Length: 309
Picture (tube, one colour):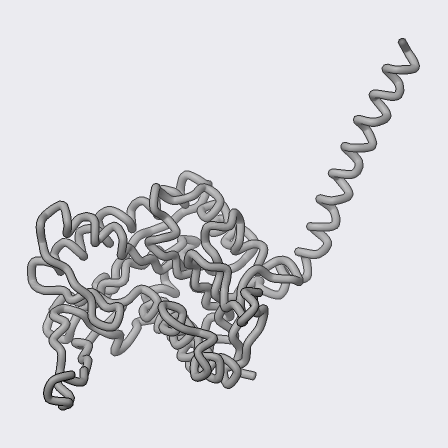
C-alpha cells in the first residue's frame, strides 16, 4: 500500500513539475516581448459583435495586464448590434449605405445613448472589476475627436449619374486631440473611447469605430493598432490564416478578391493607420480567450499583421 502511495505521489509531483516547466517556458517566451512594448501605446478596437452578452473577463484581464507591464492601452469600442437592437425596440427605422448606418436626428440620440451610456460603461466596469483603473470618454469629451460630415457618392442605376447620398449625422475624424489621451494615460488610467465625434459647430456625429481607432492610433503614433472582430484574420484561398501582409500585398489581395466583404474596410483602416505612422496593425478574433496576450507576447501571434513593407 505504501508503495502505491509513493508511486501516486511521484506521479502527482511529475505532473506538477511539468506544469511549472510549461509556465516557465511561457514566461521566458513572453519576457522579450514584454520588454519590447514597455512604455509603448497600443490601441485596441473592441467590436460590438465581440461583446454580445457582456464584456468577457479575459478581455478585461488582458487590458489590465497590458497596463501592468508598462504598456499604455487605449480601448476604442463599437456597438453596431446593440444600437440596432435598441433602434428596433424604439421602432426607429434603420438602413445602411456601404456598411454605414444612416443616422437621422432621432437615431443619433439613440446611438449616443447606447455607445456612451451603456456599452462604454460596461467595458469600464469590466476593466475595473479585473483590477484596472479605466475611465470612459467619447470623442466629444475635451474635443477629443473633431469630426466632419461624411459624404458618399453613389451611381444612380437608372440615370447612370453620380449623386450624393445623405447619411445624416454620420461623420469622419478631422482631427484627434492626442493630448487628452496622453493626460489620461499619464494619470495611470486606461481610456475607453466611444466613437462619437463633435463637429466644429457642436454637432454630434456617429463615426465608424474602426475609423476612430485608426485615427486615434495615428495621432498617438501607436506601436500597434489591434482590431478585434469575429474572425481570426485574413484567410487565403485555402481558408488558412495569413500571418503577415505588407501594405502592397494587402492591396493586391483586395484587388484580386481574396479580401472581400466586411474585411475590406478593416484592411483599409489598417493600411491608413500604418501609413499614418503606426508601426503595425493586427486583425484578431476577439472571441478567442486572451487573444491580445497571444498576439503581443508570443512569437507565433494570433492574427494577421499589416506592416508598411
